[in-house]
Image (cartoon, rainbow, N blue to C red; front, side):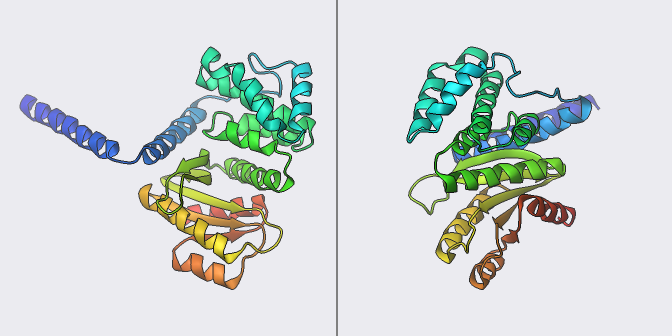
Length: 280
């Protein structure tokens, strides 16, 4: 019995080493994506066993005073001002001074308050974001982009945030936002808009917030990138979301490539993902 136990232990160690070597052979972005998946599962597990402390805007540890937010909001509202805001906040070294979690929380709180002051977000949505999505990989960068002076960029990134919030409220785990990856098709890295999880299944979401029809060529290129992501990250279903129903060509192309095609507002998208998760 003792020998059998020792053998099992050795086999377990060997299996772990093989798994580690297999992981090490993956591109760095794949390792990061898998780590984000594990982290989302751990966060969800902890949430089941302990109440999450609710936060109000401007009330996190070391949050910037309102006078500083007013100043940053005025700068962000100018052309190229967001870059200047990023430089100012970068010089404050929040992550280095207070650690990754606390540092990013300060930055997320700051960008949310700037967005509220400049009319990009309602206080209700900003507070909900802080309480439901704080700590999500990629959230800080997304909130920074929502403070753009370009209305179309704001609309697109805001839709990504709203989809993440809507799915979170339906019980999905948020894995990451704006996950960078190399699809092997485009010249450089591209990104995955929203990455969520329900049970053992991941949903990789590409979101388009065009008021009119999305060009077929653009949909085709982004769909190929989406398929490449899902090929390398197992148990992941690719989902392409539109504000309005896409054209026949796009729908046929997505169906042919086994990519789910959804359209509607963020609540409708979340409801359809809820249904998809129940049958997968």
